Length: 208
Image (cartoon, rainbow, N blue to C red):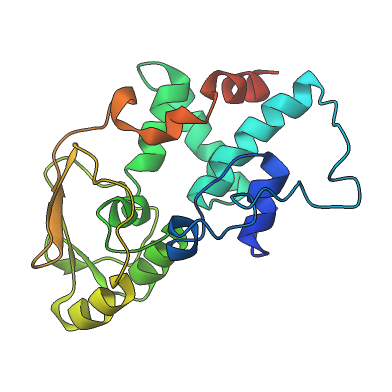
C-alpha cells in the first residue's frame, strides 16, 4: 500500500482522532473532526462495533498516517524496534521522532510533517551544513539541522501567523537563523504522540 494522498481530514475522522495534519487550518480549529463531523461514509453516524483485530489495526494506522509512511516503511521501523534494546513500542516511536522530516516539523520550520518532507526533498534543509534530501534520515544527537540561507525568506513567509505546538525539550532551536540541534533521544514523557496512541496494541498487531 502506498502513502495516502487523499483528504487528510477524512483519515482523522475515520480513525476517530485529530491527527493534526492540516497545519494552520488545524490550529484555527477548522478541520472537519474539530467541527464534530462523523466518520466518512454513509454509515458514519451508525454505532460501530470494532473487533480486537480492528482495534490493533486502527492504532497502527494512526501512527502510520501521523508520520506519513508507506506500509513497508512502517513495518521496517517496527522490525528494527523489535530487535533493539528497550520497550518495542516506545523504541518505535523514538525512531519515528528522529526522522529528519519529523525533526524539521518539531523545530517548527514547517506547519505539517508533509510540508517538512517536501522541504527536505527539495533541498531546503541542511544537516551539519550539508544539504540532505532524504526525509527518512535518522538524525543523531548533536547534529545541527538548519534551513538553507537562500530559503529563509520563503520558509518564514510560509510560517507567518503559525504558532504550532511547543518545541520539545529534547530539541534546541535558534529562531533567528532557523537552525537547531537534537540534544538527546526523546523519552516517553517528551513525546506527545503517546497521548493518543496505544503502542502496546501496535506491538500486538505485528505479534499475531
